[in-house]
Length: 68
Image (cartoon, rainbow, N blue to C red; front, top):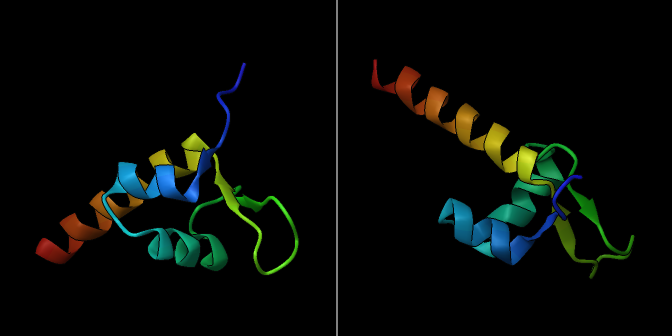
């Protein structure tokens, strides 16, 4: 059974970023599988936990490459 997706606020807390940053990541497609609860502009984002794991791996790799 897959765990329920996180809200933008929950995802922001786990990543240590703002909720606005999570929305930017969702809109840009960097959090793969993130969906809006309503198609309107005011809809809330839901982020799969796997998307956070993938993003954190990507972010760590990008930082390591920049440090070289």
